[in-house]
Amino acid sequence: MIGFSKVSKRYPGGFEALKDVSFSIAAGELTFVTGHSGAGKSTLFKLIAAIERATSGTVLVNGQNVGALRPAAIPFLRRNLGLVFQDQKLLYDRSVFDNVMLPLAFSDFSGREAARRARAALDKVGLLARERAHPMQLSGGEQQRLAIARAVVNRPAVLIADEPTANLDAGSAERIIALFLSFNQVGVTVLIATHDEQLIARHAARTLRLAAGGLEHDSAEGGE
Amino acid sequence: MNAWLRQHGRAIASAAAKISAQRTTNAVSALVIGIALALPAGGYALLSNLTGLAQRTSLEPQLSLYMLPETKSSESEALGKRLRADPRLAAVRFVPRDEALAAMRGTEALAEVFAALERNPLPDAFVLRALDSAPGALDVLAGEYRVLPGVAQVQIDSDWARRLEAVLRIARTGIFMLGALLGIALVAVTFNTIRLQVLTQRQEIEVTKLLGATDGFIRRPFFYLGAAQGLAGGVAALGIVWLSIESLNQGVRALAATYGSAFQLTHLAGADGVAVAALAAFLGWLGAFLSVSIHLREI
Image 1 (tube, each protein chain N blue to C red):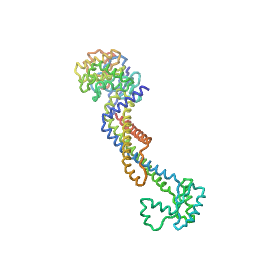
Image 2: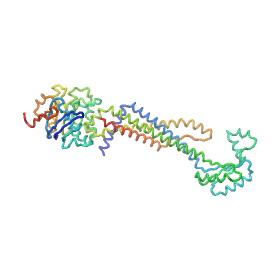
Image 3: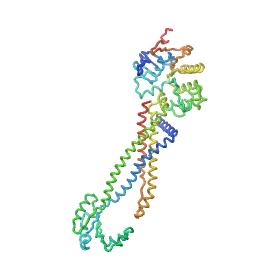
Image 4: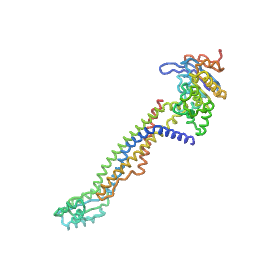
Protein backbone atom coordinates (compact mmCIF):
# COMPACT_ATOMS: atom_id res chain seq x y z
CA MET A 1 0.00 0.00 0.00
CA ILE A 2 2.77 2.38 1.03
CA GLY A 3 6.38 1.68 0.15
CA PHE A 4 9.52 3.70 0.80
CA SER A 5 12.66 2.59 -0.98
CA LYS A 6 15.95 4.27 -0.06
CA VAL A 7 14.15 7.60 0.38
CA SER A 8 16.14 10.72 1.30
CA LYS A 9 14.82 14.22 1.63
CA ARG A 10 17.10 17.21 1.77
CA TYR A 11 15.47 20.62 2.19
CA PRO A 12 16.84 23.71 0.48
CA GLY A 13 19.54 24.93 2.81
CA GLY A 14 20.99 21.47 3.27
CA PHE A 15 18.99 20.07 6.18
CA GLU A 16 18.59 16.34 5.60
CA ALA A 17 15.21 15.37 7.09
CA LEU A 18 15.18 11.75 5.90
CA LYS A 19 18.17 9.55 5.15
CA ASP A 20 17.91 6.37 3.13
CA VAL A 21 14.61 5.22 4.62
CA SER A 22 13.04 1.98 3.37
CA PHE A 23 9.93 0.20 4.60
CA SER A 24 6.71 -1.18 3.25
CA ILE A 25 3.22 -1.11 4.71
CA ALA A 26 0.62 -3.63 3.56
CA ALA A 27 -3.03 -2.83 2.92
CA GLY A 28 -5.10 -2.86 6.11
CA GLU A 29 -2.07 -2.50 8.40
CA LEU A 30 -1.94 -0.19 11.44
CA THR A 31 1.43 1.48 11.85
CA PHE A 32 2.84 4.05 14.25
CA VAL A 33 5.72 6.27 13.20
CA THR A 34 7.57 7.61 16.18
CA GLY A 35 10.63 9.57 17.11
CA HIS A 36 11.57 12.89 18.67
CA SER A 37 10.47 16.09 17.04
CA GLY A 38 12.75 16.76 14.11
CA ALA A 39 13.28 13.06 13.54
CA GLY A 40 11.51 13.23 10.16
CA LYS A 41 7.94 12.14 10.97
CA SER A 42 6.31 15.16 9.35
CA THR A 43 8.54 14.89 6.31
CA LEU A 44 7.50 11.28 5.89
CA PHE A 45 3.86 12.37 6.07
CA LYS A 46 4.46 15.11 3.47
CA LEU A 47 6.21 12.75 1.07
CA ILE A 48 3.26 10.34 1.10
CA ALA A 49 0.77 13.16 0.43
CA ALA A 50 2.99 14.63 -2.32
CA ILE A 51 3.31 17.88 -0.40
CA GLU A 52 7.07 17.46 -0.70
CA ARG A 53 9.10 15.45 -3.17
CA ALA A 54 11.86 13.05 -2.21
CA THR A 55 15.37 14.13 -3.15
CA SER A 56 16.22 10.52 -3.95
CA GLY A 57 14.57 7.12 -3.65
CA THR A 58 11.01 6.07 -4.48
CA VAL A 59 7.78 6.61 -2.57
CA LEU A 60 4.99 4.27 -3.68
CA VAL A 61 1.37 4.85 -2.65
CA ASN A 62 -1.35 2.59 -4.05
CA GLY A 63 1.18 1.36 -6.61
CA GLN A 64 1.85 4.90 -7.84
CA ASN A 65 5.31 6.45 -7.75
CA VAL A 66 4.47 9.66 -5.93
CA GLY A 67 7.68 11.44 -6.89
CA ALA A 68 7.05 10.85 -10.58
CA LEU A 69 3.44 12.06 -10.61
CA ARG A 70 2.54 14.92 -12.92
CA PRO A 71 1.26 17.92 -10.93
CA ALA A 72 -2.18 17.38 -12.49
CA ALA A 73 -2.32 13.84 -11.07
CA ILE A 74 -1.54 14.83 -7.48
CA PRO A 75 -5.12 15.87 -6.57
CA PHE A 76 -6.35 12.40 -7.50
CA LEU A 77 -3.69 10.76 -5.33
CA ARG A 78 -4.77 12.92 -2.38
CA ARG A 79 -8.43 12.03 -2.84
CA ASN A 80 -7.55 8.42 -2.05
CA LEU A 81 -5.76 9.45 1.13
CA GLY A 82 -7.39 10.61 4.31
CA LEU A 83 -5.05 13.26 5.69
CA VAL A 84 -5.15 14.51 9.29
CA PHE A 85 -2.73 17.41 9.61
CA GLN A 86 -0.76 18.37 12.68
CA ASP A 87 -2.34 21.85 12.62
CA GLN A 88 -5.69 20.35 11.50
CA LYS A 89 -6.18 22.97 8.79
CA LEU A 90 -9.83 23.58 9.58
CA LEU A 91 -11.56 26.56 8.03
CA TYR A 92 -12.74 28.79 10.84
CA ASP A 93 -15.05 30.93 8.72
CA ARG A 94 -17.57 28.13 8.18
CA SER A 95 -19.56 25.62 10.17
CA VAL A 96 -18.51 22.16 11.25
CA PHE A 97 -20.80 20.69 8.60
CA ASP A 98 -19.33 22.85 5.82
CA ASN A 99 -15.81 21.86 6.85
CA VAL A 100 -16.69 18.21 6.33
CA MET A 101 -18.43 19.06 3.03
CA LEU A 102 -15.21 20.60 1.68
CA PRO A 103 -13.67 17.46 0.10
CA LEU A 104 -17.08 16.51 -1.29
CA ALA A 105 -17.38 19.76 -3.23
CA PHE A 106 -14.98 18.49 -5.87
CA SER A 107 -16.29 14.95 -5.87
CA ASP A 108 -19.03 13.84 -8.22
CA PHE A 109 -21.66 13.35 -5.54
CA SER A 110 -24.95 15.17 -5.80
CA GLY A 111 -25.63 17.73 -3.09
CA ARG A 112 -27.96 15.38 -1.22
CA GLU A 113 -25.58 12.40 -1.34
CA ALA A 114 -22.70 14.64 -0.22
CA ALA A 115 -24.70 15.94 2.75
CA ARG A 116 -25.63 12.39 3.69
CA ARG A 117 -21.99 11.32 3.66
CA ALA A 118 -20.91 14.37 5.63
CA ARG A 119 -23.48 13.63 8.34
CA ALA A 120 -22.42 9.97 8.41
CA ALA A 121 -18.79 11.04 8.96
CA LEU A 122 -19.80 13.52 11.68
CA ASP A 123 -21.90 10.84 13.34
CA LYS A 124 -18.93 8.47 13.28
CA VAL A 125 -16.74 10.93 15.21
CA GLY A 126 -19.60 11.93 17.55
CA LEU A 127 -20.05 15.50 16.31
CA LEU A 128 -23.39 15.20 14.50
CA ALA A 129 -25.14 17.28 17.15
CA ARG A 130 -22.64 20.09 16.61
CA GLU A 131 -22.85 20.37 12.81
CA ARG A 132 -24.00 23.98 12.99
CA ALA A 133 -21.28 25.05 15.42
CA HIS A 134 -18.11 26.77 14.28
CA PRO A 135 -14.73 25.10 14.80
CA MET A 136 -13.76 27.88 17.22
CA GLN A 137 -16.56 26.75 19.55
CA LEU A 138 -15.17 23.22 19.72
CA SER A 139 -12.68 21.87 22.25
CA GLY A 140 -9.25 20.73 21.10
CA GLY A 141 -10.35 17.10 21.04
CA GLU A 142 -13.51 17.95 19.12
CA GLN A 143 -11.54 19.94 16.56
CA GLN A 144 -9.27 16.95 16.06
CA ARG A 145 -12.29 14.70 15.58
CA LEU A 146 -13.70 17.18 13.07
CA ALA A 147 -10.41 16.98 11.15
CA ILE A 148 -10.75 13.18 11.16
CA ALA A 149 -14.36 13.35 9.94
CA ARG A 150 -13.18 15.52 7.04
CA ALA A 151 -10.36 13.07 6.28
CA VAL A 152 -12.62 10.03 6.12
CA VAL A 153 -15.68 11.55 4.42
CA ASN A 154 -14.47 10.39 1.00
CA ARG A 155 -13.93 6.88 2.48
CA PRO A 156 -10.24 6.65 1.62
CA ALA A 157 -8.33 3.37 1.66
CA VAL A 158 -5.45 4.99 3.55
CA LEU A 159 -5.66 7.26 6.59
CA ILE A 160 -2.55 9.19 7.60
CA ALA A 161 -2.34 11.38 10.69
CA ASP A 162 0.49 13.67 11.78
CA GLU A 163 0.60 14.05 15.60
CA PRO A 164 -3.19 13.70 15.99
CA THR A 165 -2.98 13.61 19.80
CA ALA A 166 -0.55 16.47 20.35
CA ASN A 167 -1.82 18.98 22.91
CA LEU A 168 -4.72 16.74 23.95
CA ASP A 169 -5.40 15.41 27.44
CA ALA A 170 -5.08 11.64 27.89
CA GLY A 171 -8.83 11.01 27.67
CA SER A 172 -9.29 12.91 24.42
CA ALA A 173 -6.14 11.34 22.97
CA GLU A 174 -7.38 7.87 23.78
CA ARG A 175 -10.71 8.61 22.10
CA ILE A 176 -8.90 9.81 18.95
CA ILE A 177 -6.77 6.66 18.83
CA ALA A 178 -9.87 4.53 19.34
CA LEU A 179 -11.38 6.18 16.28
CA PHE A 180 -8.33 5.35 14.18
CA LEU A 181 -8.45 1.75 15.43
CA SER A 182 -12.09 1.44 14.45
CA PHE A 183 -11.29 2.60 10.89
CA ASN A 184 -8.42 0.12 10.78
CA GLN A 185 -10.78 -2.66 11.84
CA VAL A 186 -12.92 -2.09 8.74
CA GLY A 187 -9.87 -2.47 6.51
CA VAL A 188 -8.44 1.05 6.25
CA THR A 189 -4.65 1.26 6.20
CA VAL A 190 -3.75 3.59 9.07
CA LEU A 191 -0.45 5.41 9.61
CA ILE A 192 -0.09 7.58 12.71
CA ALA A 193 2.92 9.75 13.37
CA THR A 194 3.31 10.50 17.08
CA HIS A 195 6.02 11.21 19.60
CA ASP A 196 3.82 9.85 22.42
CA GLU A 197 5.65 6.65 23.43
CA GLN A 198 3.12 5.76 26.13
CA LEU A 199 0.34 5.81 23.62
CA ILE A 200 2.26 3.40 21.40
CA ALA A 201 3.03 1.17 24.34
CA ARG A 202 -0.69 0.74 25.04
CA HIS A 203 -1.42 -0.55 21.54
CA ALA A 204 0.11 -3.58 19.95
CA ALA A 205 0.91 -2.32 16.51
CA ARG A 206 3.85 -2.10 14.16
CA THR A 207 6.10 0.82 15.00
CA LEU A 208 8.62 2.60 12.82
CA ARG A 209 11.11 4.55 14.91
CA LEU A 210 12.87 7.46 13.26
CA ALA A 211 15.95 9.15 14.69
CA ALA A 212 17.69 12.10 13.05
CA GLY A 213 16.15 11.24 9.70
CA GLY A 214 17.10 7.57 9.67
CA LEU A 215 14.88 4.55 10.28
CA GLU A 216 16.30 3.39 13.58
CA HIS A 217 13.95 0.52 14.23
CA ASP A 218 11.08 -1.31 12.51
CA SER A 219 9.17 -3.54 14.94
CA ALA A 220 7.99 -5.71 12.01
CA GLU A 221 11.56 -6.82 11.49
CA GLY A 222 11.86 -8.07 15.05
CA GLY A 223 14.52 -7.14 17.52
CA GLU A 224 12.24 -6.48 20.49
CA MET B 1 -21.88 15.83 -18.60
CA ASN B 2 -23.90 15.87 -15.41
CA ALA B 3 -20.76 16.02 -13.31
CA TRP B 4 -19.37 18.75 -15.54
CA LEU B 5 -22.53 20.81 -15.12
CA ARG B 6 -22.46 20.21 -11.38
CA GLN B 7 -18.85 21.41 -11.14
CA HIS B 8 -19.72 24.61 -13.02
CA GLY B 9 -22.87 25.06 -10.99
CA ARG B 10 -20.78 24.84 -7.80
CA ALA B 11 -18.21 27.26 -9.23
CA ILE B 12 -20.95 29.78 -10.04
CA ALA B 13 -22.48 29.36 -6.57
CA SER B 14 -19.04 29.87 -5.03
CA ALA B 15 -18.42 32.96 -7.17
CA ALA B 16 -21.82 34.36 -6.17
CA ALA B 17 -20.95 33.77 -2.51
CA LYS B 18 -17.64 35.60 -2.97
CA ILE B 19 -19.45 38.53 -4.63
CA SER B 20 -22.09 38.84 -1.94
CA ALA B 21 -19.45 38.53 0.79
CA GLN B 22 -17.74 41.64 -0.60
CA ARG B 23 -20.66 43.49 -2.13
CA THR B 24 -19.31 47.02 -1.75
CA THR B 25 -15.86 46.28 -3.11
CA ASN B 26 -17.32 44.47 -6.09
CA ALA B 27 -19.84 47.22 -6.77
CA VAL B 28 -17.11 49.87 -6.68
CA SER B 29 -14.89 47.84 -9.03
CA ALA B 30 -17.82 47.39 -11.42
CA LEU B 31 -18.44 51.14 -11.32
CA VAL B 32 -14.78 51.92 -12.04
CA ILE B 33 -14.85 49.53 -14.98
CA GLY B 34 -18.17 51.01 -16.09
CA ILE B 35 -16.86 54.57 -16.13
CA ALA B 36 -13.70 53.52 -17.95
CA LEU B 37 -15.67 51.63 -20.60
CA ALA B 38 -18.32 54.36 -20.93
CA LEU B 39 -15.72 56.66 -22.55
CA PRO B 40 -14.99 54.53 -25.64
CA ALA B 41 -18.55 53.16 -25.76
CA GLY B 42 -20.04 56.66 -25.61
CA GLY B 43 -17.53 57.92 -28.16
CA TYR B 44 -18.48 55.07 -30.41
CA ALA B 45 -22.19 55.90 -30.05
CA LEU B 46 -21.62 59.56 -30.97
CA LEU B 47 -19.41 58.52 -33.85
CA SER B 48 -22.07 56.18 -35.23
CA ASN B 49 -24.49 59.09 -35.21
CA LEU B 50 -22.10 61.36 -37.10
CA THR B 51 -21.13 58.58 -39.50
CA GLY B 52 -24.79 58.02 -40.35
CA LEU B 53 -25.19 61.72 -41.00
CA ALA B 54 -22.15 61.88 -43.28
CA GLN B 55 -23.16 58.78 -45.19
CA ARG B 56 -26.67 60.04 -45.86
CA THR B 57 -25.26 63.21 -47.42
CA SER B 58 -22.34 61.80 -49.32
CA LEU B 59 -24.62 59.39 -51.14
CA GLU B 60 -25.85 62.34 -53.23
CA PRO B 61 -23.31 62.97 -56.01
CA GLN B 62 -24.29 66.62 -56.29
CA LEU B 63 -22.49 69.52 -57.95
CA SER B 64 -23.39 73.21 -57.76
CA LEU B 65 -22.43 75.29 -60.79
CA TYR B 66 -22.48 79.08 -60.38
CA MET B 67 -22.50 81.45 -63.37
CA LEU B 68 -20.67 84.75 -63.50
CA PRO B 69 -22.98 87.50 -62.17
CA GLU B 70 -23.00 89.38 -65.47
CA THR B 71 -24.08 86.37 -67.54
CA LYS B 72 -27.16 86.93 -69.62
CA SER B 73 -30.04 84.54 -69.14
CA SER B 74 -29.80 83.44 -72.77
CA GLU B 75 -26.25 82.29 -72.16
CA SER B 76 -27.38 80.42 -69.09
CA GLU B 77 -30.12 78.71 -71.07
CA ALA B 78 -27.62 77.67 -73.74
CA LEU B 79 -25.42 76.13 -71.07
CA GLY B 80 -28.47 74.44 -69.56
CA LYS B 81 -29.18 72.76 -72.91
CA ARG B 82 -25.62 71.57 -73.13
CA LEU B 83 -25.71 70.17 -69.60
CA ARG B 84 -28.96 68.35 -70.20
CA ALA B 85 -27.37 66.67 -73.17
CA ASP B 86 -24.47 65.35 -71.03
CA PRO B 87 -25.11 61.58 -70.54
CA ARG B 88 -23.09 61.54 -67.31
CA LEU B 89 -25.66 63.66 -65.50
CA ALA B 90 -28.81 62.20 -64.02
CA ALA B 91 -30.56 65.51 -63.32
CA VAL B 92 -30.03 69.16 -64.07
CA ARG B 93 -31.96 71.83 -62.21
CA PHE B 94 -31.66 75.45 -63.19
CA VAL B 95 -31.92 77.97 -60.37
CA PRO B 96 -32.41 81.47 -61.85
CA ARG B 97 -30.92 84.31 -59.78
CA ASP B 98 -34.37 85.73 -59.03
CA GLU B 99 -35.57 82.43 -57.68
CA ALA B 100 -32.43 82.11 -55.54
CA LEU B 101 -33.02 85.58 -54.10
CA ALA B 102 -36.66 84.76 -53.34
CA ALA B 103 -35.53 81.60 -51.58
CA MET B 104 -32.99 83.51 -49.49
CA ARG B 105 -35.59 86.11 -48.52
CA GLY B 106 -37.84 83.27 -47.45
CA THR B 107 -35.20 82.03 -45.00
CA GLU B 108 -35.91 83.49 -41.60
CA ALA B 109 -32.33 84.11 -40.63
CA LEU B 110 -31.26 85.75 -43.88
CA ALA B 111 -34.46 87.65 -44.79
CA GLU B 112 -33.33 90.92 -43.20
CA VAL B 113 -29.90 90.83 -44.83
CA PHE B 114 -31.32 90.29 -48.30
CA ALA B 115 -34.13 92.81 -47.82
CA ALA B 116 -31.50 95.50 -47.27
CA LEU B 117 -29.78 94.79 -50.59
CA GLU B 118 -30.59 97.05 -53.51
CA ARG B 119 -29.80 94.62 -56.26
CA ASN B 120 -29.57 90.86 -56.51
CA PRO B 121 -25.98 89.77 -55.79
CA LEU B 122 -26.72 86.15 -56.64
CA PRO B 123 -25.77 84.53 -59.93
CA ASP B 124 -27.71 82.03 -61.96
CA ALA B 125 -26.91 78.52 -60.84
CA PHE B 126 -27.34 74.90 -61.79
CA VAL B 127 -27.74 72.03 -59.36
CA LEU B 128 -26.42 68.89 -61.05
CA ARG B 129 -26.66 65.29 -59.99
CA ALA B 130 -24.14 62.93 -61.52
CA LEU B 131 -24.81 59.27 -62.33
CA ASP B 132 -21.48 58.12 -60.95
CA SER B 133 -21.03 58.97 -57.27
CA ALA B 134 -17.30 58.17 -57.12
CA PRO B 135 -15.32 61.20 -55.90
CA GLY B 136 -12.96 60.89 -58.89
CA ALA B 137 -15.81 61.08 -61.40
CA LEU B 138 -17.19 64.18 -59.70
CA ASP B 139 -13.77 65.82 -59.84
CA VAL B 140 -13.58 65.16 -63.62
CA LEU B 141 -17.00 66.72 -64.18
CA ALA B 142 -16.20 69.72 -62.03
CA GLY B 143 -12.93 70.26 -63.91
CA GLU B 144 -14.69 70.16 -67.29
CA TYR B 145 -17.48 72.52 -66.32
CA ARG B 146 -15.20 75.01 -64.63
CA VAL B 147 -13.71 76.04 -68.01
CA LEU B 148 -17.04 76.44 -69.83
CA PRO B 149 -17.86 80.01 -70.87
CA GLY B 150 -19.74 82.03 -68.26
CA VAL B 151 -19.04 79.58 -65.40
CA ALA B 152 -17.68 81.22 -62.27
CA GLN B 153 -17.36 78.26 -59.91
CA VAL B 154 -18.17 74.59 -59.65
CA GLN B 155 -18.52 73.11 -56.21
CA ILE B 156 -18.75 69.45 -55.25
CA ASP B 157 -21.42 69.57 -52.56
CA SER B 158 -20.43 66.27 -51.01
CA ASP B 159 -16.91 67.52 -50.36
CA TRP B 160 -17.69 68.50 -46.80
CA ALA B 161 -19.20 65.08 -46.20
CA ARG B 162 -16.04 63.46 -47.49
CA ARG B 163 -13.93 65.65 -45.25
CA LEU B 164 -16.19 64.83 -42.33
CA GLU B 165 -15.78 61.18 -43.14
CA ALA B 166 -12.01 61.55 -43.14
CA VAL B 167 -12.19 63.30 -39.77
CA LEU B 168 -14.49 60.60 -38.47
CA ARG B 169 -12.05 57.95 -39.63
CA ILE B 170 -9.37 59.59 -37.50
CA ALA B 171 -11.81 59.86 -34.59
CA ARG B 172 -12.67 56.19 -34.99
CA THR B 173 -8.99 55.25 -34.77
CA GLY B 174 -8.72 57.43 -31.68
CA ILE B 175 -11.68 55.75 -30.06
CA PHE B 176 -10.31 52.29 -30.82
CA MET B 177 -7.01 53.28 -29.25
CA LEU B 178 -8.82 54.67 -26.22
CA GLY B 179 -10.91 51.50 -26.08
CA ALA B 180 -7.82 49.31 -26.25
CA LEU B 181 -6.11 51.27 -23.47
CA LEU B 182 -9.17 51.20 -21.22
CA GLY B 183 -9.65 47.53 -22.05
CA ILE B 184 -6.16 46.94 -20.68
CA ALA B 185 -7.15 49.00 -17.64
CA LEU B 186 -10.16 46.74 -17.17
CA VAL B 187 -7.93 43.67 -17.29
CA ALA B 188 -5.65 45.34 -14.73
CA VAL B 189 -8.53 46.21 -12.39
CA THR B 190 -9.85 42.63 -12.46
CA PHE B 191 -6.32 41.30 -12.11
CA ASN B 192 -5.97 43.23 -8.88
CA THR B 193 -9.40 42.44 -7.42
CA ILE B 194 -8.88 38.76 -8.09
CA ARG B 195 -5.41 38.94 -6.56
CA LEU B 196 -6.95 40.33 -3.38
CA GLN B 197 -9.57 37.59 -3.44
CA VAL B 198 -6.91 34.93 -3.84
CA LEU B 199 -4.95 36.37 -0.93
CA THR B 200 -8.00 36.59 1.36
CA GLN B 201 -8.85 33.00 0.54
CA ARG B 202 -5.33 31.78 0.69
CA GLN B 203 -6.03 29.43 3.57
CA GLU B 204 -9.13 27.97 1.96
CA ILE B 205 -7.25 27.44 -1.31
CA GLU B 206 -4.36 25.82 0.53
CA VAL B 207 -6.63 23.44 2.41
CA THR B 208 -8.78 22.46 -0.58
CA LYS B 209 -5.61 21.79 -2.54
CA LEU B 210 -4.33 19.50 0.22
CA LEU B 211 -7.64 17.68 0.27
CA GLY B 212 -7.35 16.87 -3.44
CA ALA B 213 -8.95 19.76 -5.30
CA THR B 214 -7.71 20.13 -8.87
CA ASP B 215 -6.36 23.49 -10.03
CA GLY B 216 -9.40 23.73 -12.28
CA PHE B 217 -11.74 23.43 -9.29
CA ILE B 218 -9.89 26.18 -7.45
CA ARG B 219 -9.61 28.49 -10.45
CA ARG B 220 -13.11 28.18 -11.88
CA PRO B 221 -14.94 30.36 -9.31
CA PHE B 222 -12.37 33.12 -9.84
CA PHE B 223 -12.94 32.99 -13.60
CA TYR B 224 -16.67 33.38 -13.07
CA LEU B 225 -15.98 36.16 -10.60
CA GLY B 226 -13.80 38.06 -13.09
CA ALA B 227 -16.27 37.56 -15.93
CA ALA B 228 -19.17 38.67 -13.71
CA GLN B 229 -17.27 41.76 -12.66
CA GLY B 230 -16.44 42.62 -16.28
CA LEU B 231 -20.04 42.02 -17.27
CA ALA B 232 -21.33 44.23 -14.46
CA GLY B 233 -18.86 46.92 -15.56
CA GLY B 234 -20.02 46.58 -19.17
CA VAL B 235 -23.66 46.90 -18.15
CA ALA B 236 -22.78 49.94 -15.99
CA ALA B 237 -21.00 51.48 -19.01
CA LEU B 238 -24.08 50.93 -21.19
CA GLY B 239 -26.23 52.55 -18.51
CA ILE B 240 -23.92 55.55 -18.32
CA VAL B 241 -23.91 55.92 -22.14
CA TRP B 242 -27.68 55.61 -22.30
CA LEU B 243 -28.17 58.28 -19.63
CA SER B 244 -25.63 60.58 -21.29
CA ILE B 245 -27.29 60.32 -24.71
CA GLU B 246 -30.70 60.89 -23.15
CA SER B 247 -29.56 64.06 -21.42
CA LEU B 248 -27.60 65.29 -24.46
CA ASN B 249 -30.66 64.72 -26.61
CA GLN B 250 -32.67 67.38 -24.79
CA GLY B 251 -30.15 69.97 -25.98
CA VAL B 252 -29.70 68.38 -29.41
CA ARG B 253 -33.44 68.35 -30.07
CA ALA B 254 -33.74 72.02 -29.16
CA LEU B 255 -30.79 72.87 -31.42
CA ALA B 256 -32.09 70.78 -34.32
CA ALA B 257 -35.53 72.39 -33.99
CA THR B 258 -34.01 75.80 -34.74
CA TYR B 259 -32.86 74.35 -38.08
CA GLY B 260 -36.31 72.87 -38.62
CA SER B 261 -34.85 69.37 -38.21
CA ALA B 262 -36.12 66.54 -36.08
CA PHE B 263 -32.58 65.18 -35.69
CA GLN B 264 -31.64 63.54 -32.42
CA LEU B 265 -28.90 61.20 -31.25
CA THR B 266 -29.74 57.53 -31.47
CA HIS B 267 -28.75 55.07 -28.74
CA LEU B 268 -26.23 52.29 -29.25
CA ALA B 269 -27.73 49.51 -31.35
CA GLY B 270 -28.77 46.37 -29.48
CA ALA B 271 -26.04 44.30 -31.12
CA ASP B 272 -23.41 46.92 -30.17
CA GLY B 273 -24.65 46.88 -26.58
CA VAL B 274 -24.40 43.10 -26.44
CA ALA B 275 -20.91 43.32 -27.95
CA VAL B 276 -19.78 45.84 -25.30
CA ALA B 277 -21.14 43.66 -22.46
CA ALA B 278 -19.63 40.48 -23.94
CA LEU B 279 -16.26 42.12 -24.51
CA ALA B 280 -16.25 43.47 -20.94
CA ALA B 281 -17.07 39.99 -19.61
CA PHE B 282 -14.28 38.49 -21.70
CA LEU B 283 -11.74 41.07 -20.50
CA GLY B 284 -12.82 40.43 -16.90
CA TRP B 285 -12.29 36.73 -17.45
CA LEU B 286 -8.88 37.44 -18.97
CA GLY B 287 -7.85 39.54 -15.96
CA ALA B 288 -8.97 36.76 -13.63
CA PHE B 289 -7.18 34.15 -15.71
CA LEU B 290 -3.87 36.02 -15.61
CA SER B 291 -4.21 36.83 -11.92
CA VAL B 292 -5.12 33.30 -10.85
CA SER B 293 -2.44 31.74 -13.05
CA ILE B 294 0.22 33.90 -11.46
CA HIS B 295 -0.97 33.99 -7.86
CA LEU B 296 -2.04 30.39 -7.40
CA ARG B 297 1.47 29.33 -8.22
CA GLU B 298 2.61 31.15 -5.08
CA ILE B 299 0.33 29.08 -2.84
